Length: 157
Image (tube, rainbow, N blue to C red; front, side, top):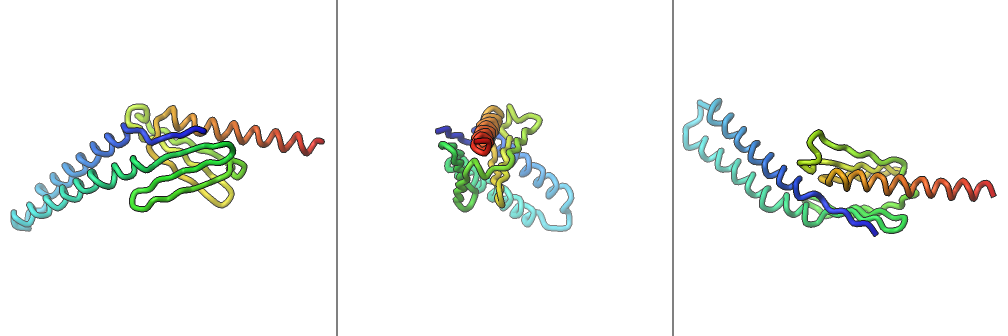
């Protein structure tokens, strides 16, 4: 059984990204919204920061606490979600391809993704360490090749 969890660096990266978005929205608000009174701009700015704070406190940690990817035998289980909890179970024999998306600074940020394409389904797993994302793809590809060899050897008999 192999169990993979999202990278904690990705959570930090998302926090930093949320702060940058907040600063950018504040700069736009104070720079370009000149027709509204100051107290309205202040209220809008506080609402934006409140929303960013709520997302940073509840949504992001919730995802990182509940998300996981487990490979047991010939079955894959991917669980997680931001607002709802979703669990996907898939047999490795049904998998047609595995794609690994590694961002330019994926080693430092943890913003790496794994996409598993199967017969009529697609599983998208977010925020894994680079080595974990590559390991997931390697394990699944290795098992797919083993199953293909077994199938070919049975057909020849």
